[in-house]
Image (spheres, rainbow, N blue to C red):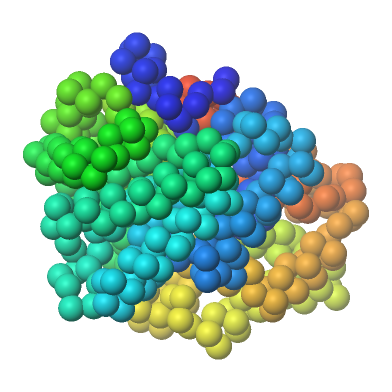
Length: 436
């Protein structure tokens, strides 16, 4: 069942809520799994990149928006997923990557980035200018945030009209968890204060109108709020729908909006379904997908170690540990504890900061070595049961390890689609997500 972004609010008003899962990853195997799943189910495939990950200067992936769009659509063609079934979006588009500079410089870069996103065909744009730049408070007031969001929206509108490829839809609001999860154990994550959410909507509506952008505001489809979900390095805070009810009630007065929920990773089907039913029509997931990818790579690493003495003892894990120790910038400061705990977290943290290392040449080489070792090999059923207990279908026949990895990511995506009411079944995906 294909649900479009601009239909989500109407579905909620009809008491038949539907949701869309937003895949927030640049890993080709995760993207391939999402696109293959989209071809199979006929659902909207929403894939998003963040301002730090992909921007006009390259971001930490080295990709511009055009590069990212080309990657997604090339993979879609390979997987037979129709292009008109795909939406690509930009998350947290604003001055964040340049916030150490004066506001004028940072906003100039943000405008150039938004133009690059829209010109490349991104049609879901999250306007996020909430962060302070050099000499400003860490978080800006609503009025300044809205004014800067208007500047970015104007650029997006002008770029879209010039390109002639359709006008974007917008997400506003900025109250989100730390990107990639918190770095400490969490016990309580309060939902967004309803009055604060109402104020955000009202100030943006007024500011857009004053700037002559009423038509653009009519395409604002969602508001980012904190529903009370989050994950730390070792624990998950699950959705409490009763606690979120005062926030949810706002949507009764905003019939054209839904909420966008960030950091929904590891929630499990039932909390995800409750989120969708309560109006959180866009569920963003990222680290969980690369977590299960890493989990499966490490299972294959163990299988290769047991199956082929020439492969070496956990060759992939050893290579990743060497790389992370030599280049600790992506995890150091995010993991706390004694050396044994930090070593464990480098590999197994729920925030999955190991995902930043997979694009590196050393990691790619270690993964290729693993996949080449197993490709075409027949893995005995007992060995599959030992390391991939639910993967019996891969035993006793020539193995295609990429298919194992895509299968595992797809299981996680099926849980989201079951919750969204657009595909998958709860019965088939009970264990598809990691539930705290």
